[in-house]
Image (cartoon, rainbow, N blue to C red; front, side):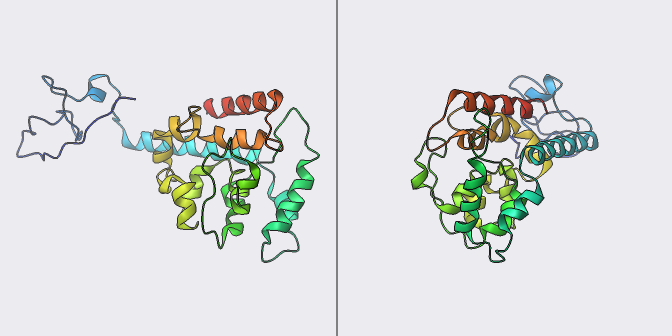
Length: 232
């Protein structure tokens, strides 16, 4: 991705500042010796704001729809919390573990959740125990974080309805909750497989682990699932 620096110069009269891209409505610096910025020079600049907004909306809708398809249904989730109006975490995880023991060995070892599903369970969340979700021992992960590790749409964990600690450590400070924010950072928030920004792959690999072990079949399934997000 080509980075552009936003200009602090403001238009004066009919002529724009010499350091600013000459394209109408573009507020970025021009390339030295050129009249336009790198994006405008390559024809990558947004020329139709409404069309771009719609494109971003469609992308987020497809991403959220794929997450809902992969995650357990709301009915199944309701069964997990049934009878526990105060959302007892230990009881919930015990029922969850019983369900996951019956999962096939060529798929995920843990079920997936959506951010919306787990939101009621996060009341009282205080501290994040996760420093390396994919590799750290299960025993070192606190109960709430075991649930958050199963959330695929981690960008929605940045919504204001979640505790600030979750928004900070799990939800990218809320930067990707908007369609435009998610689309423009999709390479980092969703697709990335590198060590710094795992995106969705972080949850996929965590859910592929069974008793701190990651077998080849489950790892292959995680990679195949990531490809579905890359096709959005």
